[in-house]
Image (cartoon, rainbow, N blue to C red; front, side, top):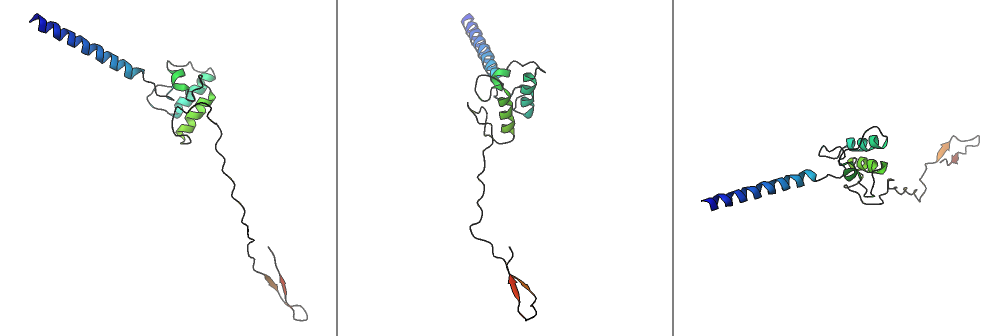
Amino acid sequence: MTLVKSMMAVIASTLIIFAFAVSNTAAEKTIIGDVDGDGSVTVQDATVIQHVLANIKEPGDNYTEAGDVDNDGEVTSNDATLILRYKAGLIPSLPFGPNVPTTAPTVAPTTAPTTAPTVAPTVFPTDSQGWGQIIYRP
């Protein structure tokens, strides 16, 4: 009977340790871009970065890990801009690799038509001899 109790105690201890390890792993998972730690990436996360950079607010525990969305090793205004671009749908996901361009892509201008538009002639009343004048105006 003591052997069964000992085995049960070992199994219970193992389960408790396993459950603690799993809960710590889940708690330590950081969402890239979620600087304020509320569980989702929002415009507020970009605002937190701006406040920390302006010395208005102290950085939180996961500020550096979650705030470095461009993977350059530091949290800068570029990271706040990338979060805003992500929320606006301009970039597909976070993190958004090193050396990310911060300017929007340019759209090629449309070309002008190659043929001139047709213009109906303007006819003026006849002169003293009965001749009319046709003048083309664009």
